[in-house]
Image (cartoon, rainbow, N blue to C red; front, side, top):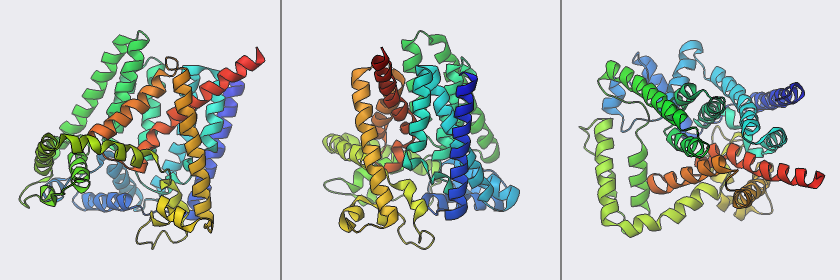
Amino acid sequence: MQNRDRQITLGVAALFTLAQLLLLAHYGYTPYPDAEGYVLLARQSLVQGSLYPTLQQINHEPFIWNCGAINLVALSLWLTHSITPLLLFYAVLKGATAWLTTAVAHRLFGRRTALLTLALYVAYPANYGECTSVLSETPFVFLVMLAFHQALRHRPLAAGTLLALAQWIRPFALVFLLAWAVYAWAHGRRRSILSTCLSYAATLLLIGGSCQLRTGHFICQAQTGWMALLQYSVDHAAAPDTALLSTPDSLNAPQRNDLWRRRTLQWMARHPMEYLAQMPRKLGETYASDNVNFCAFLPDKATSPYLYGPLSLRSLWRDWPHLTPVQALTVFNLLFYATLLLLFLVAVARQPRRLLLPAAVVLLGTLMLLVAGHGEARFHIPFMPFVIMAITVGESTKGRKAKG
């Protein structure tokens, strides 16, 4: 980046960070159900005197959740007896992610695309309010973008380590490692693939080995995937068998995870057509809504029995046209978001080779969710930096053609 472009990028990222901090100061903490679970488990681990998961939690909790995200909460509580410093840190990470997304776009596609990416990233309404919670998206996306930034600067060992830390935060970083491998292979950087993968594996081995020394169990990431897939499959089956979800009280969390894995594979073998038929619904539930972060602006979020209720698509349809200000903002964002997705599809269709990396991220991530996951609006959030930069590639190309 030229000095002037760097100054513009840093200035916009700083203003974007300031906006996050002001929103946090005004609206305060958002008690999403998962976030409340993180805080509870973090407090437990501190009382039990160890990192999450502790041996007691492994033996008595039904599953292992997002280890890195929970330990970040625990660190904030241990240092300050509050999660507020972590929320402030996440606001800074959100601003840093804006800068990193711009830097990655510059490395991949050049100056004009990078500046357009920054403008669209900070204009995207769903990028505001996320740091009012301790959910895993903010640190996860930051680490992923930092990993790609390092990989594009020919630092594969750092990239692999960062992706492993992202996997520890939330078990979805493998998608981004595979996407990088596709891109690197296509661009003749095959040696870097091995270095990145080895660093990724070594870091996860260190994390898991540390847990084994503390607890006797090798755990390097969350173990919720099989449970979630089984629950989704059973809940949406023609003949739901809820008994598949129950487990003996004598089992610890890894044993439950293994039991859910075996039951999931058995259910899929017995109901292959139902398993495949559920995929379109997963796709719709992943991409139809983009409303999660707007819960930050709900006036009654601290006491609401169901936080997502007022902003669900059903509620927005029911209340139209008499919407609250937060609902109106949510509808505006839905139109903005739908336009982004449409423009992304058009851009990839027109320039598939040039947009290989963004396309690989979204395609592989979507396939992973369809095959081994379930549908949820939050799950597309890590793809959005790549969606945005792909769109701006098309716009910058148009700009060059117009000048020519």
